[in-house]
Amino acid sequence: MPLRMSALALILTFLALLLCTAAAVSAQGYSLVGSQFFLQKASAPMPGPAPSAAAPAPQAVASLLPDTLPGTEQGRGAVSLNPGAASLFRGRSGGGLFAPILRAPPSVKRLLDLIASAEAGKAQYDAVQYGATRKPPKKPTSMTIAEINTWIDATPGQPHAIGRYQFIPATLRRLVRHQGVKPQARFTPELQDQLAHQLIEEAGYSAFLASEMPRKTFMLNLAKIWAGLPVSSGKSYYEGYAGNSASLTWAHFKAEMQRIFPT
Image 1: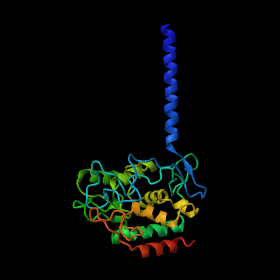
Image 2 (image 1 turned 135 degrees about the vertical axis):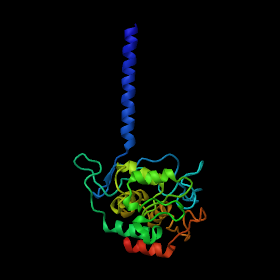
Image 3 (image 1 turned 180 degrees about the horizontal axis):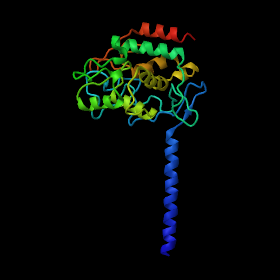
Image 4 (image 1 turned 90 degrees about the horizontal axis):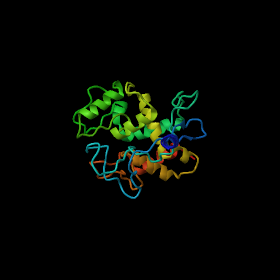
């Protein structure tokens, strides 16, 4: 009798392990998009809901508040707008999830330039949020991901938006973890673009190009990630929180989007 019970327990344990493994594989959520530019693992969602379209999130995580506040939602790309979206920039071949590097379409580069005009100012890839009273010890493009994390951890209570696309810590860490970027990797312009590409796709880039998402919805999703971009009212999605306001007018944003994506 004890032997039979031991065997049964072993079988049940084995089945439980199989179920856990299957669930883990399913959770990876591979999503392939047919343009051959978007071949990458789908981004796993961070805990908590994304901001609703009806009202701004209660935390303007990009500007003058600390990066996280208890009991508040996170915005600015800290939570994926579309956890099932494929990422951009790198393809999957030869068994490697993030190799080789693929060239971004010209429309992506022009869109990134537009976003940077609202976010980074003249500093561009070396931009650091102006509310950070204790700046990094050197230019962001000269720092590694590990050094950026050390600076963030050593300077609590201030904003830490960094780089051309003003990544906040929660967003930076989510993207780095998802894309398998090593701590020793330098925060180069190329890496910053690579991380921003994923946010663009999560906002609905492929769906918009396929006419599956209205232009206005895509623009709203971009404004949910980048506070310097306006919504149709002309205000930031995070207007009024910690001094956030749109850096571009709605007319300019709309005109530039029509120029970049004429059809």
